[in-house]
Length: 529
Image (cartoon, rainbow, N blue to C red; front, side, top):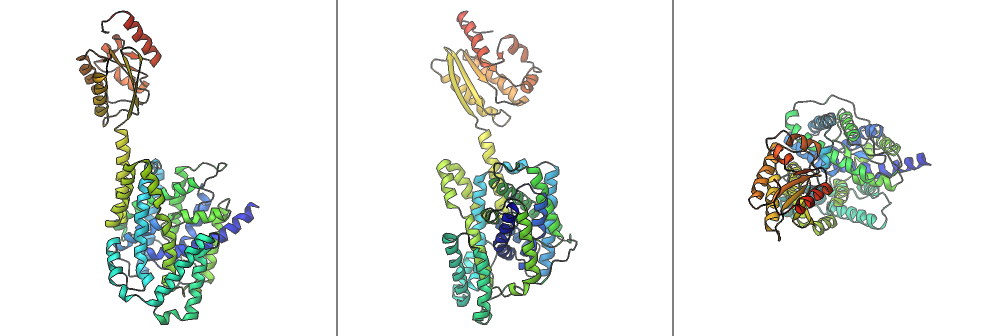
C-alpha cells in the first residue's frame, strides 16, 4: 500500500514540480531544461541520503532569485551556454559550502535565524520575483534588475504590452488561482502548461507576437566538469545560497515530519543537500533545496517515503527524453504565470499580522528585512536578515529577566533568568543596585540565584566584586547561591574569594541560604562580616 501511495504521489508531484521548476529556471535567467535537470539528479541524490521522508528536493523561488543575482554578477544573462556553465560552478560551490558546514558541525547556526527574519525575507523575495515576471506577462522587453526599477520599467511600458500575451497571462493566472481555491488537488501547473501548448497551435500565438520559451533539447544532460573561471565572483553568492538552501530544507523537513518518523538531524541534512548540489553541478542544475510548495504537493498526494521523489525524478527523465519538442511550444507568459502563482504563497500577510500581535519589535525586524531586500537586492537582504537575527538574540541575552521575592524580612532574593556574560553583566549590575537600594524597606542581604549562569568570566567576577562594594555603602550584603561548578572554580582563584568564603556569602542552594540568613537575623542587628 505504501509503495502504491508513493508511486501515485510521485507522479502527481511531478505534474506540479516540473512546470514550476522550469519556470524557476527562467527566474534565474537559465534555459527551461535546467529546471528539468534539477528535478532529476539532485532529487535522486537527496532521496538516497536525506532524512526527511516526504521532502521534495529541487529548487525554490528564494534560491533561484539569488542564483539570478549570481549569474548577473558573472556577466552571463544573455548567453544560455555561458549561463549554464556558470550555474554549474555556482551549484558546485554551493554544495562544497554545505559540506564544509557539515564538516565544521555548523548546523546550529541556522537554528539561530528567526522565523521573523525568514517571514520578511520571503515577502521581499516574492515581490521581487513577481516584478521580474512582469515583462513576460505583458510581452514587453526585459527591464533592469531590482524591484523598484522593475516596477518603473513595467509602468513606463504598459502602452507597449502585447494584447495576446496579456490575454494568455490573464487566462492562465485566473485559471490557476481558481483551481487553487476550488480544486486544490487538481495539478494546476500541468493544466496550465498543456493549455498554453495547445493555444500555441490552435491560435497561432507566435504569429500574434506571443514569445515562446527557448527550445528545450531532447535527451538527458551530458555530465561535464564545472569551470572555475568565475569561482571568485560566485563564491559569496554560493555561501548565501548554501545558508538559505539548508535553512529551507531543514524547515520543510521538520514541518512535514510525522511523530513516528526518525528525527531530522541537521548534520545529515547538510550532507544530503551538499551531495545533491555537487551531483547536480556536473549536469548544470540550479542549486537545489527542499521546497515547501512541492513538498506539500508530495504530502497531499499521500507520499510516505522518498520513493515518491524517485518516481518524480523518473517523470522528469521521461519528460526530458520524450516531451522536449512539445515543451518548446510553451508561451513565456504561461510559464511566468505558473511562477507568479507559486510565489504568491510567500506573501504571507497573516503571518506578519500574527508576529505583530505577539511582538511589535519582531514585526519591525521582519518588515526591515523585506524592505532591505527590495531596495537593494536579495543577497543583501539575506545578510541583513542574518545580522538582524543575531541582533535579536543579543538583545534578549543582554536583557535577562530578573524576578524577586522576599522569603524573610530583610532578605531580597533575585533570580537571574539567563546566563551572565561580558555584554550583559553591566546591565544586570545596574538593575541589582537599583532594586536593592530602592526597596522599601531596604534589605540587609541581597541573595542572587545563579542557577542559570553556566560559567563566568573575569569581567563578570570583577562586576560582582564592584557590586558587593557598592552595596556595602548602603549597608547591604551580597550573597550568592546555586553557583555552577565551572563558575565556582574560577571564582575560587580570585583574591576576593577568601572574604566571600569566610563571610558566609556563598551557599549551595536557596534553602541553605535562607536558613543561614535566619540564623544571622536571630543573632542580632549586626551585619555579617
